[in-house]
Length: 137
View 1 (cartoon, rainbow, N blue to C red):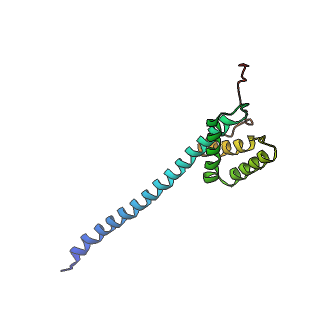
View 2 (cartoon, rainbow, N blue to C red):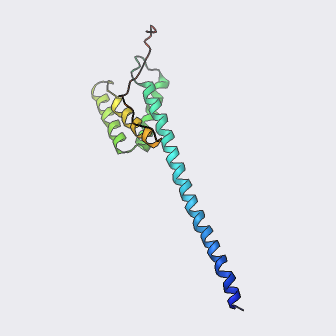
C-alpha cells in the first residue's frame, strides 16, 4: 500500500500544503498588523486636526468642544507614551489656569510621530496655529 512511489509523491504534496498554510498565516498576521497601524495613524491624524482646529479660538462653539474632547479620547487610546504625557501635562495646565494652556507641545509630539510614520522629514519649525480674527485681519 505505501510503496516508495507513494512516498515520493506524498512528501512534496505535504510540503506544498504545509508551506501554503504557514504562508497564509504569516500573510494574515502581516495584514492585521498593517491595518492596525493604518487605523492608528488615521485616528491620530484626525485627532491632530481636531486639536489644531480648536486651538486658540477666541470663541469656541459646541462642535469645537466636542471635537476637542474626542481628540483627547483618541490620544489617550491610541497615543504613545510621550503623546499621553504631553496630553496630561496640557490638561493639568488647562485645569490649573482656568482653561488656558499651551497645546503646542502636544501638537508637536503628534506631528513628529506622524511625519516619521508617514516617511516624511522632520518639520523644520515649531507649530504655528493661524487664526483669522473676527474683523478678518
